[in-house]
Image (cartoon, rainbow, N blue to C red; front, side, top):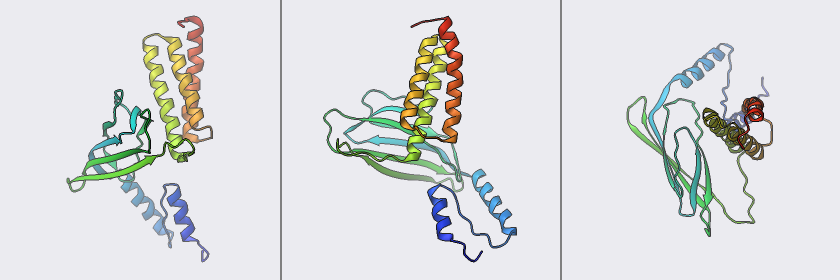
Length: 219
């Protein structure tokens, strides 16, 4: 209509990681959807590798990524990522800690290297972030980061539970999943559809585990 607020729609799309298209003719709707589907199916980057580096004040405690292995006091981490399609989004979560007696912010550098799927040329993207350590400062976390962190913690809890179950350590499996559930609730107490699905999976496993714990107590 003549009162269409395109600026508002563009802000809404950008704020929710969506896309805005102005369609003047009904026939253009099919073209828009076809273009979006093609972009999602189109390979964009291959041989994707992510390097994460912390400044001298920080240490990596845990990496929520399949195959990641973190050693005590580690400040660098290299991860091989799957190929990326156009429009794809990937999430890698790290838990970091300040070195005892450290002052100033924790600096984190992320370097993404890849090979273009269309040209075959090598590419590189980098970004830097800082987290203040001042006791008086109350950090403001991105809601999306908190949600993904909660999902990552639950996923790790499910993996730890599965490993303990394979070893028939039922109480250890139960503890690992309960700790993950409580930590995820602390990280993101709100409601979210994706997170709720993982919470329900965890709750189902906990109900099953309780029967094993009651029958084979190994505390």
